[in-house]
Length: 368
Image (cartoon, rainbow, N blue to C red; front, side, top):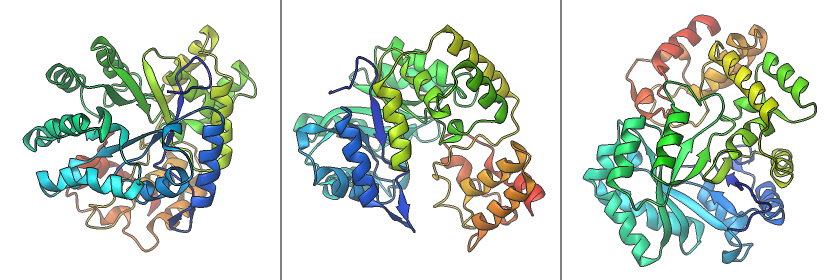
């Protein structure tokens, strides 16, 4: 893999691409792709379940750059499939959508304790190994949102896995629900390379609480808050790529500056991050990353991540007026927090293992 420096490379996460209205802004995405490649980085990450992302990848990347100038990852998600055949068909559809010919990295998507048995029952581990032998996949792995015990079990049962994608950021390092730190240690004990997802926790760490901003500004004046999060992740050993879901050219430029002038975190920065972790441990904010996996199956059509983001303006920032304005936009044409019927679909889909139903009740109390 081509890297701009001797460090973990930045990966372009294609989940939160810029939009014009409801459509992905392919023109701006293309400029972002060009800047990313020009800086010497090559790792692009999409998924079958990211709406419009694979098609935008074809238009902005595959049709505009030589195939050997980049590496492309996508994912097979069993949660959205009807049966084993339907799940296996996702690879063919992803190849058609992207026009990539093959995938450098292919992942079984979002494994956790609630769905891991489905990947076994449907023979999907054997499927990706077969496709690797055929050459349509160069490396195979899985993205993971489960317990350390499950991760150890999967890596023991599938020692030929090439890499693992883990949610790692300084906010979740010791989080008992996400267990970033322990999952990282297990993957490294099995000798696996790691792709890091959510290093900025869905953008939350690019705009942390004011107390953390003040702390970071005092320690390293002028360094962006996103850069703090990205450098924490990239300073770990064994990292293949640190994915950043960049949504505009300005974010791309900031991230490229971080990685093209990269230096691992020093002791003063580690101390500041440790203090930030303590502050976040006592935060009232809902720790949602905005992935949106909970949205499609909601029978009341509640846009849960936007509802939570609105609530956080009051819970974490004491901005009640802005919270209500944001909430009004979040529920326009959709369900309100109080419309939740407690079916639990959202909690089964949530990779953060949040008590979504309980939080929606809280949101209804403070916002309606």
